[in-house]
Amino acid sequence: MNRPLEIVVVDDEALAAERLAGFLADMPDCRVLATAANAHQAFSLAQSQQPDLLLLDIAMPGESGLDLARRLQSLPNPPLVVFCTAFDQHAVAAFEAQAVDYLLKPVRRERLRESIERVIRLKRSPASEEARDFVAASFGGVIRRIALADIHYLHADDKYTIVHHRGGEHVLDQSLKDLEQQHPARLLRIHRNCLVNRAQLAELRRDGEGRIWALLKDSATPLEVSRRCAGELKDWFKGN
Image (cartoon, rainbow, N blue to C red; front, side):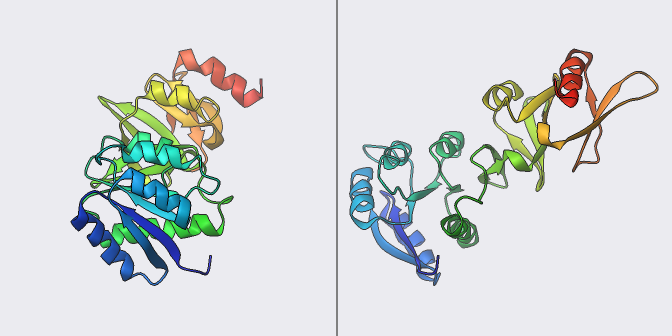
Protein backbone atom coordinates (compact mmCIF):
# COMPACT_ATOMS: atom_id res chain seq x y z
CA MET A 1 0.00 0.00 0.00
CA ASN A 2 1.83 3.10 -1.27
CA ARG A 3 -0.88 5.74 -1.06
CA PRO A 4 -1.86 7.32 2.29
CA LEU A 5 -4.29 5.44 4.49
CA GLU A 6 -7.70 7.11 4.05
CA ILE A 7 -9.52 7.51 7.35
CA VAL A 8 -12.87 8.67 8.72
CA VAL A 9 -12.96 9.70 12.40
CA VAL A 10 -16.30 8.96 14.10
CA ASP A 11 -17.04 10.51 17.51
CA ASP A 12 -19.98 12.51 18.85
CA GLU A 13 -17.55 14.58 20.95
CA ALA A 14 -16.08 17.19 18.64
CA LEU A 15 -12.96 17.73 20.76
CA ALA A 16 -12.18 14.00 20.78
CA ALA A 17 -12.57 13.82 17.00
CA GLU A 18 -10.36 16.89 16.53
CA ARG A 19 -7.68 15.40 18.78
CA LEU A 20 -7.52 12.19 16.76
CA ALA A 21 -7.56 14.09 13.48
CA GLY A 22 -4.70 16.25 14.77
CA PHE A 23 -2.60 13.18 15.56
CA LEU A 24 -3.30 11.77 12.10
CA ALA A 25 -2.37 15.04 10.41
CA ASP A 26 1.19 14.54 11.68
CA MET A 27 1.41 11.08 10.12
CA PRO A 28 2.43 11.35 6.44
CA ASP A 29 1.00 7.93 5.59
CA CYS A 30 -2.51 8.97 6.74
CA ARG A 31 -5.19 11.21 5.27
CA VAL A 32 -8.38 12.16 7.11
CA LEU A 33 -11.24 12.17 4.62
CA ALA A 34 -13.88 13.43 7.04
CA THR A 35 -15.22 13.32 10.58
CA ALA A 36 -18.67 12.07 11.58
CA ALA A 37 -20.69 12.69 14.73
CA ASN A 38 -22.89 9.60 14.60
CA ALA A 39 -23.29 6.19 13.01
CA HIS A 40 -25.68 7.41 10.31
CA GLN A 41 -23.16 9.95 9.02
CA ALA A 42 -20.35 7.42 9.28
CA PHE A 43 -22.18 4.77 7.26
CA SER A 44 -22.98 7.29 4.52
CA LEU A 45 -19.31 8.29 4.37
CA ALA A 46 -18.24 4.66 4.27
CA GLN A 47 -20.51 4.13 1.26
CA SER A 48 -19.54 7.29 -0.63
CA GLN A 49 -15.87 7.74 0.28
CA GLN A 50 -14.85 4.08 0.75
CA PRO A 51 -12.22 4.81 3.41
CA ASP A 52 -9.61 2.26 4.43
CA LEU A 53 -10.26 2.79 8.13
CA LEU A 54 -12.78 4.11 10.63
CA LEU A 55 -11.60 5.33 14.01
CA LEU A 56 -14.86 4.63 15.79
CA ASP A 57 -16.33 5.58 19.16
CA ILE A 58 -18.75 3.12 20.77
CA ALA A 59 -21.14 5.18 22.92
CA MET A 60 -22.91 7.60 20.58
CA PRO A 61 -26.48 8.89 20.27
CA GLY A 62 -28.60 6.49 18.25
CA GLU A 63 -26.82 3.50 16.78
CA SER A 64 -23.75 2.43 18.74
CA GLY A 65 -20.31 2.00 17.27
CA LEU A 66 -20.54 -1.76 17.78
CA ASP A 67 -23.78 -1.96 15.79
CA LEU A 68 -22.27 0.20 13.06
CA ALA A 69 -19.18 -2.01 12.83
CA ARG A 70 -21.41 -5.04 12.28
CA ARG A 71 -23.48 -3.19 9.66
CA LEU A 72 -20.35 -2.12 7.79
CA GLN A 73 -19.67 -5.76 7.00
CA SER A 74 -22.61 -5.67 4.59
CA LEU A 75 -20.73 -3.26 2.30
CA PRO A 76 -18.93 -4.66 -0.76
CA ASN A 77 -15.61 -3.29 0.50
CA PRO A 78 -16.01 -2.59 4.24
CA PRO A 79 -13.41 -0.40 5.95
CA LEU A 80 -11.28 -1.71 8.77
CA VAL A 81 -12.26 -0.50 12.24
CA VAL A 82 -10.25 0.65 15.26
CA PHE A 83 -12.40 1.48 18.26
CA CYS A 84 -11.55 4.53 20.39
CA THR A 85 -13.65 4.51 23.53
CA ALA A 86 -13.71 5.40 27.20
CA PHE A 87 -15.14 2.00 28.18
CA ASP A 88 -13.09 -1.17 28.49
CA GLN A 89 -15.98 -3.64 28.90
CA HIS A 90 -16.79 -3.90 25.20
CA ALA A 91 -13.44 -5.30 24.04
CA VAL A 92 -14.55 -8.87 23.36
CA ALA A 93 -17.65 -7.72 21.45
CA ALA A 94 -15.49 -5.25 19.52
CA PHE A 95 -13.10 -7.90 18.30
CA GLU A 96 -16.01 -10.19 17.47
CA ALA A 97 -17.14 -7.34 15.20
CA GLN A 98 -13.78 -7.71 13.39
CA ALA A 99 -12.05 -4.70 14.95
CA VAL A 100 -8.33 -4.39 14.28
CA ASP A 101 -7.64 -2.71 17.63
CA TYR A 102 -9.30 -1.24 20.71
CA LEU A 103 -7.94 2.00 22.15
CA LEU A 104 -8.98 3.52 25.45
CA LYS A 105 -9.47 7.26 25.77
CA PRO A 106 -7.61 9.47 26.13
CA VAL A 107 -5.85 7.92 23.15
CA ARG A 108 -2.10 8.41 23.19
CA ARG A 109 -0.31 9.40 20.00
CA GLU A 110 2.11 6.46 20.29
CA ARG A 111 -0.71 3.96 20.78
CA LEU A 112 -2.60 5.34 17.78
CA ARG A 113 0.57 5.03 15.72
CA GLU A 114 0.79 1.33 16.62
CA SER A 115 -2.76 0.79 15.38
CA ILE A 116 -2.11 2.66 12.16
CA GLU A 117 0.94 0.51 11.45
CA ARG A 118 -1.11 -2.62 12.08
CA VAL A 119 -3.79 -1.44 9.64
CA ILE A 120 -1.17 -0.66 7.00
CA ARG A 121 0.28 -4.17 7.38
CA LEU A 122 -3.20 -5.63 6.96
CA LYS A 123 -3.84 -3.58 3.83
CA ARG A 124 -0.51 -4.66 2.36
CA SER A 125 -0.88 -8.38 3.01
CA PRO A 126 -4.30 -9.28 4.45
CA ALA A 127 -3.83 -13.00 3.91
CA SER A 128 -0.65 -13.22 5.99
CA GLU A 129 -1.58 -10.98 8.91
CA GLU A 130 -2.78 -12.19 12.32
CA ALA A 131 -5.18 -15.12 12.43
CA ARG A 132 -8.81 -14.29 13.06
CA ASP A 133 -8.76 -16.52 16.12
CA PHE A 134 -7.79 -14.49 19.15
CA VAL A 135 -8.39 -13.73 22.79
CA ALA A 136 -8.80 -10.23 24.22
CA ALA A 137 -6.30 -9.26 26.92
CA SER A 138 -6.07 -6.15 29.10
CA PHE A 139 -2.79 -4.67 30.26
CA GLY A 140 -1.53 -1.22 31.17
CA GLY A 141 -4.89 0.40 30.46
CA VAL A 142 -4.88 -1.09 26.94
CA ILE A 143 -7.01 -3.89 25.51
CA ARG A 144 -5.66 -5.81 22.58
CA ARG A 145 -6.25 -9.13 20.90
CA ILE A 146 -3.69 -11.93 21.09
CA ALA A 147 -3.73 -14.43 18.24
CA LEU A 148 -4.29 -18.03 19.31
CA ALA A 149 -1.25 -18.98 17.24
CA ASP A 150 0.91 -16.95 19.67
CA ILE A 151 -0.49 -18.58 22.82
CA HIS A 152 1.51 -21.20 24.72
CA TYR A 153 -1.02 -22.01 27.45
CA LEU A 154 -3.68 -20.50 29.72
CA HIS A 155 -4.26 -21.15 33.37
CA ALA A 156 -6.82 -20.12 35.96
CA ASP A 157 -5.45 -18.26 38.98
CA ASP A 158 -8.14 -17.56 41.61
CA LYS A 159 -10.66 -15.34 39.80
CA TYR A 160 -8.46 -14.64 36.79
CA THR A 161 -7.38 -16.37 33.60
CA ILE A 162 -3.75 -15.79 32.67
CA VAL A 163 -2.64 -16.20 29.07
CA HIS A 164 1.02 -17.10 28.52
CA HIS A 165 2.01 -16.16 25.00
CA ARG A 166 4.89 -15.13 22.79
CA GLY A 167 4.77 -11.57 24.13
CA GLY A 168 4.54 -12.38 27.86
CA GLU A 169 1.68 -12.93 30.31
CA HIS A 170 -1.62 -11.06 30.50
CA VAL A 171 -5.01 -11.22 32.19
CA LEU A 172 -8.19 -12.26 30.37
CA ASP A 173 -11.81 -11.64 31.31
CA GLN A 174 -12.97 -14.98 29.90
CA SER A 175 -13.04 -18.23 31.86
CA LEU A 176 -11.17 -21.36 30.78
CA LYS A 177 -14.50 -23.07 30.18
CA ASP A 178 -15.64 -20.34 27.78
CA LEU A 179 -12.32 -20.38 25.93
CA GLU A 180 -12.37 -24.17 25.65
CA GLN A 181 -15.87 -24.09 24.18
CA GLN A 182 -15.03 -21.28 21.76
CA HIS A 183 -11.81 -22.81 20.42
CA PRO A 184 -12.02 -26.62 20.76
CA ALA A 185 -9.84 -27.23 17.70
CA ARG A 186 -7.02 -25.05 19.03
CA LEU A 187 -7.08 -25.36 22.83
CA LEU A 188 -6.89 -28.61 24.79
CA ARG A 189 -7.57 -29.04 28.50
CA ILE A 190 -4.82 -30.84 30.40
CA HIS A 191 -5.93 -29.91 33.91
CA ARG A 192 -8.98 -28.33 35.52
CA ASN A 193 -7.01 -25.07 35.69
CA CYS A 194 -5.04 -25.26 32.42
CA LEU A 195 -5.56 -25.20 28.64
CA VAL A 196 -2.73 -25.58 26.14
CA ASN A 197 -2.35 -24.64 22.51
CA ARG A 198 -2.38 -28.00 20.72
CA ALA A 199 0.27 -26.74 18.31
CA GLN A 200 2.61 -26.10 21.26
CA LEU A 201 2.53 -29.66 22.64
CA ALA A 202 5.93 -31.34 22.23
CA GLU A 203 5.98 -34.40 24.52
CA LEU A 204 4.62 -36.08 27.63
CA ARG A 205 6.79 -37.26 30.51
CA ARG A 206 6.11 -39.27 33.65
CA ASP A 207 8.17 -38.42 36.74
CA GLY A 208 9.32 -40.73 39.52
CA GLU A 209 6.12 -40.16 41.47
CA GLY A 210 3.90 -41.19 38.56
CA ARG A 211 2.77 -37.67 37.64
CA ILE A 212 2.48 -36.77 33.96
CA TRP A 213 3.86 -33.51 32.60
CA ALA A 214 3.32 -31.82 29.24
CA LEU A 215 6.31 -30.09 27.65
CA LEU A 216 5.72 -27.28 25.19
CA LYS A 217 7.77 -26.18 22.19
CA ASP A 218 8.22 -22.54 23.18
CA SER A 219 7.85 -22.57 26.95
CA ALA A 220 10.32 -23.89 29.52
CA THR A 221 7.57 -24.48 32.08
CA PRO A 222 6.43 -28.14 32.40
CA LEU A 223 2.67 -28.34 32.88
CA GLU A 224 1.10 -31.00 35.08
CA VAL A 225 -1.54 -33.19 33.43
CA SER A 226 -4.43 -34.39 35.59
CA ARG A 227 -5.43 -38.04 35.60
CA ARG A 228 -8.84 -37.07 34.21
CA CYS A 229 -7.27 -35.39 31.17
CA ALA A 230 -4.35 -37.78 30.65
CA GLY A 231 -6.25 -40.28 28.49
CA GLU A 232 -7.46 -37.73 25.95
CA LEU A 233 -4.04 -36.12 25.81
CA LYS A 234 -2.30 -39.45 25.19
CA ASP A 235 -4.80 -40.21 22.42
CA TRP A 236 -4.05 -36.84 20.84
CA PHE A 237 -0.33 -37.55 20.82
CA LYS A 238 -0.95 -40.94 19.23
CA GLY A 239 -3.21 -39.37 16.60
CA ASN A 240 -6.30 -41.24 17.76
